[in-house]
Structure formats: structure tokens, C-alpha cells
Amino acid sequence: MHLPNSLRPVLALALVLSPSALSQSAGAPWDGLTLFHPLMSTTTYLIDNSGSVAHTWPGAYRPGSSVYLLDDQTLLRTTRMTGPGGAPAGIQLVAWDGTLQWDYHDANPDVVRHHDVEILPNGNILTIAYQHITIAEAIQAGRNPTLLNGDVFSPDSILEIQPNGPTGGTIVWEWHVLDHVVQDFDSGSDNFGVVGDHAELIDINFPQNVVSDGDWNHMNGLDYNAELDQIILSAHHQNELWIIDHSTTTAEAAGHTGGNSGRGGDLLYRWGNPQAYRAGTVADRKLFGQHNTQWIADGAPGAGNILVFNNGNGRPAGDFSTVDEIVPPVEAQGVYAYTPGTAYGPTSLFWTYEATVPTSFYSSFISGAQRLPNGNTLVCSGQQGWFFEVTSIGDIVWEYNNTFTGTGNNVVFRAERYQLCMPPASYCLTAPNSVGSGALIGWTGSASYSSNDLTLNATGSSTSMPGLFYFGDQQLQTPFGDGVRCVGGNVFRLPVVFTDAGGQASYSLDLGNPLLPTSVIQSGATWEFQFWYRDPAFGGAGFNFSDALEVTFCN
Image: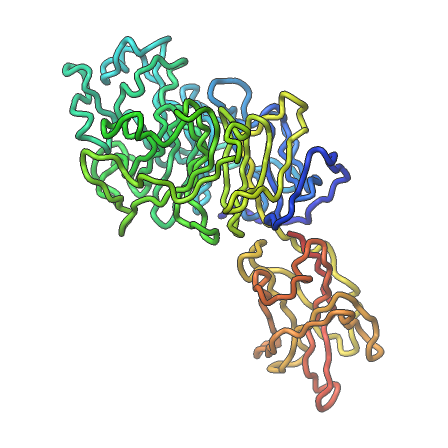
């Protein structure tokens, strides 16, 4: 992300959970660190697959509700003091060492953000927020008065906030449900039309129930697709997922034209409950109080498909949860296939996880799921604070129960797993060799095993010399009476490099390369890197070598 790097080694804390909190079955869980924030706690936790705490971020507030770890190990955290529906007090960016980098509170009391946030590639942050309107305004918009209660009606909106300074933020883009509604209740009110003819609009009188605190949509999740420049939303009370165009201006997002889609802010796609747009019956409903609708990320099996935690509230077969995957009917330029008057496809799931005894897996609220790069799926059954990793054939290979806030208070909104590797904490011996040649300078690149994330740099005593990078799991001093040589029980020779005209050389080590020895990428493995090159000072084929760099990997 476009935020300052603050990469630091993982702090291995002494706290280890009791065996009852964790179990691991035969199989291959994806190795990584799991991030979560219990809803009754003010601390965010990062644990490894053994259940040990790798890091914590204490805070002053409970979450409101999601937390994420960014590419540079900065924590993106929502915070909450009071309010319905997970309403937060603010949004924070917290460095690895706990330094509060950004602590945003909207100055407008009518803007009540809730549930979820999403960081964009440009560093801006999307958030869900209520748009409060009066009862009179709701009736003018076409809401049936008998379906109103209290003083306000609160359709949802999406805001894009550009961080500004340590506490400031500017709303640079916004989208509002209320700009895209239709109703057939009152021809004398706004937005009157034939609901069944407008699948791109939202029936302001569906579902036909009285909502508390004006919370009509109760959106509980959002995700962003950079390739399509689209946003997916989880509309809990409609039991649907919606996709909208983010490429619009704010003015276009309020209308029905513009953007890559040419449709402004109207819905591009919806799925889960065709009753909402008069294109199906109760038998056609697919979603039941769902959470965490998302596109499966690149690099994971099913990339581009949609994954959702289907809570199962009111499911005809009984109350039980599933994790469902669908293949959306997306065509070129992000257009979704649709036949007017029918339900959006698909009609069947691509993949689903359901417990062998269905009712043994049920979370009536919150919760989420994440497709992992190895094809497994991490599931957070939030009501119980129960996380488990399940294979594509339904085998549970890892599970964990949150115990940080005690029995009965261990609920967790969502859990996310990350694979991290931090820079080395120190160099090995750095005594200069006989000719005083340069040393490995350090790290460049990202902190992820998904790409070339370690670049070794060296400076030669002469220019345009051939050389090699070596690394080994031991170090021996004074192999030729001077310097440090990184060799030992396991030694690997990396491809030949040449110093350039300025005497510089580099090599990028692809830590995600499947041909790399598995011992290298094991958590806790320590290796010594060194640059060797032919040096005229040694005569003929004599080698000189740089000082050594000690690296301890973690994943």
C-alpha cells in the first residue's frame, strides 16, 4: 500500500495458549499468522498456527468491527465506543510498534461509519456509513409509513476517505443507496416505477418489515476489485450481495450514467435473493443473513470468484451456516450477463462447505471466510470465536478457539491470515576483509513470499568483476586468514552476477520459488549471505568476499 514502511521483526511473546484452545489435524494448514480482534477486547491479536501470540496491538477502544494487516505490517483498525450495528468511533492506522499513525474521527455527527473498511491501492479508505434522513424524507422517497419506526430512516452509503495528517481526512468519493431506489407503493412520491423492471435499483420497501433505529440495509462488508474498479457490498437485510462501479465521479455515482459501466451508481450485479427485485420466490433465495462477501484474491484457487459466509438465519432446511463460492457471470469490461425479468445467475454454487452435522456449524451473526493460497479456506464462526481451516473436500486441518475475553464473551467479527517475513534484526560478523571490499547492504522490495522480496546488494573493490552469491546455515571465520565466510552444513550457490561499471552487484532471491530448498523458508531458519567475486588483489582466479549478512526468516 502507499504508506510508509515500518517493517520490524516479529516480537515473539511468551504467552502460549492452552492446548484446549488449539487443535491441528492431519493435513496441511497454510502456514501464516492469523489476525483477529475480539469484539469485547481493546487489543488486536496476531497468532501463529501453534496458537502462540506473535504480536499484539493494545488500544483504547473495542473494534468496530473489522481489522486488517497491510502489506507494510501497518494495522488498519476500526474502533467503537457506542452505537448500533458496529458503529465505530473512528478508523486507525497503527504501526507495528504500536505508534498511532492516523486516528480519524469524522467531525460530522450525522456520519456514522459501521462494520467494515477497505484500503485502496492509492491509500484511500472505503468505509460503510449510515445516511440519516427524517421520517418525512423517507415517506417522500416512497417508503411505506407503516414500515417506519422512530425518528430517522438510515439507508447506507459508501465513502472514500483520503487520509490527511495524523487525524484528518477528506471524503473524495461517495455513493448512496438512496440515489438508486425504486418503489411502487405511492405514485405521488418520488422514485415511483415498476420494481420488476428495474433490477438495477433497490426496492425501498423491501423487505417489508419495520426496522429498528432506521437500519434498513445493515451493510456488513465490502471488498474492492482493482482490476474491475468495482466494489462488492453485503446487504444483510436484503439477503443479497451487490456490486457497484467505483470508476464514477461522485456526481455520476448519484445518477444512472457514467463510469466504466456507463450505468453510474446503479447496481451492476446482485445475487442471493431475487425476491428483492420481483424475479423469484422464496424457493429461489440463496443467502440468509450473510457476511463478508468478497472476491477471492489473485494467487488463490478460485481467484475472481465470489466467496461469502452464509450465516443461515431462517434457512428453510434449518438454521446452520455454510461458506459458499459462486462464479459471477462477468463478461468483458466488467459487465454482468443478465436477462431482464429473471434472476441474476448463477443458479448453483461452485463450491460450498457445510458441516457433516449441519447444525454443528452455525453463527447467527458476524463471521467470515478467506480463501488461502493452498486452496484451503479459513473460516471464522464469529459467534463462538471459533476459527478453523477446511480443505476443498471438507476436512478440517486446523482450528482455534478464542479465549482472550472469556467464555461467553469470545465473539470475533472476522479473522484473516497473512504470510509475513520481516527484515533481519542484525548482521553477522562484519570485520572487514583484507582489501576492505564492500558489504551486503541490506533489503529492498516487499515483505511477502509471493514475489522477489529479498534483494542482496554488494560493492566490489574493482569494477566489472564476475561474482557469486553464496548462502549457508553456518558461518566460519577466517577461511583464508581474514574476513568472514558464510559456509556450513548446507551451502547454496546463487546464479553468477557481475559488478557493474561502478562496482555494484545485486541478486533478487525469490522466496516463493518452489525450487528453493524447503529448509530456507521454514519459520525461524537463519542463513548467512555473502558475495564472492574474483579480485585482482588475490591474483589469477583468487576470490575476495564481502562481509556476511545474517537473515532469520519467518512465515
